[in-house]
Structures are given as structure tokens and as C-alpha cells.
Image (cartoon, rainbow, N blue to C red; front, side, top):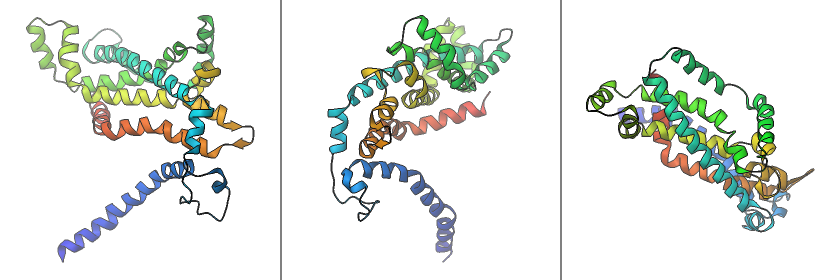
Length: 281
């Protein structure tokens, strides 16, 4: 009797609210999926149940791969996201470690300044960045985004990794230095292996931001086959007041899959990396 009362209390106070919240979060993805596999006629016929599938079709996905440059958009987005993430992680690792372990005049001020740089809205930066991209003639090249995305990625990643590096005991590094290791050897052989959760959380953050970014991609790389998925979806699947809803949802599903896959497998490391960096330093 007592056990049933405890279960009933936990059900109404914990499981039921969490279930409702999960349904609320997952419903947009469910809606995208069912719309992407419906024929166009079914989308505008009110006699069909909008929350269920009467006639299954893959024509919307075939349209993406046969009638648009979606494979090129996917390749462009993947290249830009991977290279920008790697570049940002390398820079953020050195910056975060230097601010966490080295003491020099202005180090505390520099740490706060780097974090404040992340708070600068991208809409204030794209005009000067556009002038830089035009000066070096990088429009419609991968480098236009690879060199501009780190302006938003490096500040936050450096701050996150700085907090995570401070969770590593200094005694380990001091012992390595006593054995003759240099700072670089300590960073590569000791600190980085111990900082995998922090590196993964920073990498996931960087990759997600690059994958979903729209403004810079629209301005710097929006001609011909050089578009990314967000830009190509909006520019090629929305014609004036005509929206290709099935293909739009198919593009959204395919564009969301890599991010959902990454979070499904690495969410534990992502959360631990963020929380460790938040409570230390």
C-alpha cells in the first residue's frame, strides 16, 4: 500500500510532467517527419487527418536530391562545420589553458573580455567581416565561413575550456614538470586526455552553431551550388508566396539528423563538460 502511494505520487509529480514535456519537445520533429512523407495533395485536403499518414511517399526526398542541389548543400555545410569546429577547438584549447594555468598581467581581464566578445551580436559583426572577406576576395568560398565562424565559436569555447582545465589538479602537472615535461607536452599528454568531456562539449557547441548558422552563410556564400543547407532550403524551396511544404520538411529532417545523432551519443559528455566548466573557476 505504501509502495503504491509512493509510485502514484512520483507518477503525478515527476513522470507525468516529464512525459508531457517530452511530447511537447518532440512534436515539432514528429510534424516535420509526417509532412515530409505525405503527398502534396494530402497536405491541403482537410478530409485527411493532419496528424497521421494516409498515403506514404518519398517524392519530397527524391525532389531534394533530383531537382535541387541538396547534396552540394550538405557537402558545403559539412565541410564548413567540421573545419571551423576543428580550427576553433585548437585555438580555444591554447587560449583556455593559458588563461587557466598561466599568470600574466591582465590575465583575469582578458578572460572576461573573451567571454564578453561572445556576447557581441553577429549582426554587428557581419558588416566589418564583409569588408574583410571582400578585401581578400573570399566570397563564395569555404574560407569565407571557415574564417568568420570562429569569431563566435572561439570566445565561448575558450571560456568553457578554461573552466574545465581548472578542474584538473595542478599537482599532476607539477609532477610532470618535475619529470622534465614542457608546458606543451603536459597539455598534449596529460591535460587533453583528461579533458575529453570538456572538449566534446565545446566541439558539439561549435558544430551545432556552424551547422545551423544562417546570416553569415546567406551573405558570404549564397550563390550557385555554394549554399549551405539553411540558405539553400530558404532560397530554393520558398518561391515568393509558394512554399514547397513537403520538401521543406524533408530538408529540415535531413538537416536535423546529424545534430540529433551527435546529441544522442554524446549528450552525457556534453552535460558533464558544461557543468564542470560552470562550477569551477
